[in-house]
Image (tube, rainbow, N blue to C red; front, side, top):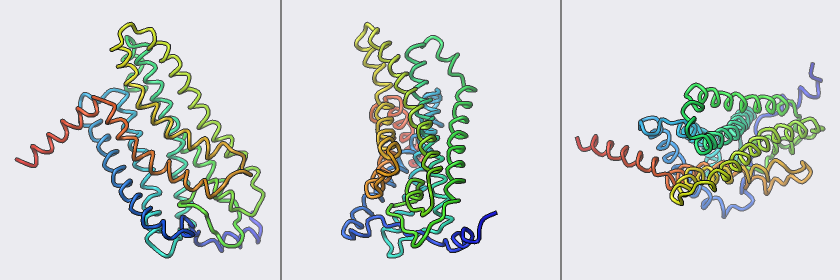
Length: 318
């Protein structure tokens, strides 16, 4: 049973104020334009990757199955946060309802946990492709790929569920002002007026599991990959093997480095001012860049996009 004091706190929660850059109004219009353009590019880029991965028979390998899920994650990432940010930047009423805030950080952390696992699975796929090429088709069969994807989504959902259950129990005293562009768990914990030791400890444990464990597996996989690549006698073969991995390494760096800085620091050192811009980076910049990174450095994807555009052009002319 909740106490009367807790009940009154819950009952008075209506809206959260998202500060964003309202203290620097001159920055709102340029940021609105940059975010709008980035959002459109992220939508176009990730939808294109999803379409060619599904429609082009040459991209039906496990690598592109995982890539299409990564693009879908990035598409959802941006859609969860950017429309709300754009609305607030263009409005004098910079608020979000308590329910909307809860849904936002629930989906955001679900997607974040899932992406951590998907990136580790993609590293495993590259390890098998380069270190065990003759057994690649046998090991990375379609059923295993589907199981790995299901584990990633279910793990991310479990991460979100635990964090949401703990966060919705926190009381918020006074004005509910978030010095952020959108709602996420660290900012909510910082705002609470109660003892947040359990929340801080749980968040640290989940972050350690979803960030450090997959990152360790990725680094281990690429350690074996590097050793295998160095044994290749042909420079052309080494270049091709490196080319299949470099895009993934860039994406991993763009995703993990901000996440590590954001979440793997003591709660007492968490700065909402810094945190909101880092959150903005991995919620819009990374999803926008990912499809272009894979397109520019991957001949198969570029070829598939050209074939798709040629097919669309023929349909338009007929």
